[in-house]
Structures are given as C-alpha cells and as structure tokens.
Amino acid sequence: MKYNLTKLLFFGILVQVVATQGIITFNLFEFFGNWELKSALHPIGVLIVLTYYGLKFVNGAVFKYSMIDILVLFYFVICTFILVYNVTDTSGFLFAFREVLLIYILVFLLEQTSIPIHLWRKILKLLYILVLLNLLFVFLTYILGPADYMKLLTGRFVWPIDMEYKFKISNYYIFWRSPGLIGETAAVGHFGLLCYFLFEEDEVYRKKKVFAFLLILVAFVRSVYLIFLFYYLFQFFLKKKNLFKLNIILPYLVGLVILVAIPLYFFKFLSLYSIVARVNHWVNDLEVEFNLLFGGAIGNVGGAARGVGFVSTLDSYWLLMLVSTGLIGIALIVLFLIEKANNNQRLKIILISFLIGAFFITITQSIPFLVLFPLLFLKKEL
Image (cartoon, helix red, strand yellow):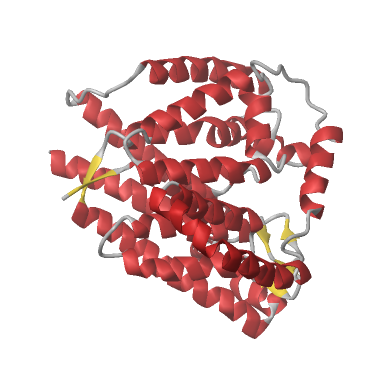
C-alpha cells in the first residue's frame, strides 16, 4: 500500500511537470478539440498530490508541525475567509489561492516526505528532456524568426502577447526572448533556474546542469540572472577560505568586472529603466485599499484581477503579499521558509536568492516556479 501511494505522489508531480509546458499542452488539447483544458492540468496535478496526503492521513500517518506551522495555518485560514468574501467567482478564488497560499501548503507537505531515489530520478529525467527540448526550440526561434515560430507552434502570431492564448514573445536588444515550449519567457528562465538547482543536488544529474544553465542564459530574464548571481555570491562569501583569497584576487576581479560591465552596458543589461518604471507603478498605480499589517486585499490583486491593468501583475511578489496578507503574513512566511530550510545551508542560500529576486517579479504567477520550487524541499530516499 505504501508503495502504491508513493506512486500516486510520483504521478501527481509528473502531471504538474507536464503542466509547465504550456505550448506542448496547448497543442495536445487543441488536437482533442479544446485547448483551454490545458489550464486544468496543473490543478489536477496538485489535487493528485493532495489526494496522496489525504490517503496517508486516513491510513494513520502523522504530520509533524511546529508553532510557526500552526501560526501560518491559522493566518492562512483567516486569509481564505477574506478571499471568499473579496472574490465574485470561482476563477478569481483559484487564481488568488494559487498565487498567495498554495506554495506554502506544498512546501509544508513535501518537506516531511521522502520519495524513492529511482522515482525521483525519473522526474529528473523528464525535466532533463524538457530542458533540452526548450533549448532546441529557443534556438529554432532564431532560425525561423518570431512570426514563423509562433505560427508553427500556435497557428498564429501576436506581438508581444497573445491575450487569448496567454503566450508571450518579445526581444531584448538584438536577442529574441522566446517562449520555448513553456509559453512565456520569464517562465522559461524560472524553469531553467530551478532545474539547475534540482540537477545540482543529484550526483547522477549534476553534470547535466550545464544544459539548464544554457537555458537560463538564452531566456534573457534579468530577475532570473539576479537570483543566479546572488546564489553564487552567497556561496562564495559564506566560505571563510574564500574571504582570504579575496585579498589576492581583488585587483584582478575589479578589472574583470569592468570588462564584463562594458558589453552589459551596451546591451542594456545594466539599465535601471525597468526598475524605475516598476517603482513608479508601485507608487502611483496601486489603486487598491489594504491594511499595512493585515493586508486584506487578497483576491483584489494579481491573477484574480485579470484585465484590471497594473494590479493584475504588480511586478513584485512582495507587493502582492503585502497587499494580500500584510506585514504579519510576510513575517510568518519568511520564518516558515527559514525553518523548513534550517539544516540545509545550500537551500537557505537558494531561498534568500529567490526572496531578493521576488522584489522585481510576481514569481508565483509562473507555473514552473509553483511546480518546481516545492520539490527543493522533497527528501530523496536512497
């Protein structure tokens, strides 16, 4: 029975991984006559995973919880009641619940779960295949051009955002920001970044992380670059022996930084325009009433407010959480994440890096992040 239940968890994770590939699932369901069904795949995968935990509970499993877990649960229950009050339809409820609450439920459950290593490596194998396919199709964008690429995969071309299909393609200076097989450039970057971290921790797939790194590079998403940069900076400075080396290499490092900064400047990677524009939106366009301590506007911002303009994206995960759950909610989830990564320094560094990057993107609007980030907490059973 235990083995069968574990396979149910495995299947639920696989369904979610497939759901990250928006263009693949679009074509799959388009073949069967209803492409809109692709949006149901991720909730189905989550439901299968939650069913696994429900069956475990019925079979007598005991879940571990701390005081922080209890406080977060209590606060989330209150937020859920407020969400029900704020939204007018089921779609709005599901969007807000997914963007604000879901990921912490999955982290709580997966953090105290072990999966047999042979099943885990099947998941990594699927991720590896998808990384390679996305690399191939990103390069295909350069061969065909954006118009022919989108017509080939979706039957039409809308620049830069197809408002019906929700696929995005754009450019960054002279480079195409291809949607790959996922459907949106930022999501391609998040997929590559999280695959990199997942490959890195497994001895069989560690060397294959180079392909995930290539996917990060060709995504041209600065928030992803920022997370990746902070990850390695923290890795470097948290080792005492590297601090002694720094005195020796500092003169050479300054020269290297200047050499790297020059092309980055000309390719506008160092431009602060987008940050200034975001801050301007945060200050002038956030026309939503909320309480600084308790939030209270959950369901009135983010994906639940689609079509309302700036408040449907916010361009900052922390602004979304501030408006939705307030400073109390933010403090609780930060404590919650730190506690879950308590005995794993590498995971702590990944967390801190994501927490910094999340200032400049609403990261939980990315399906790859929702699917792959909780897997960092899943234990592997040798």
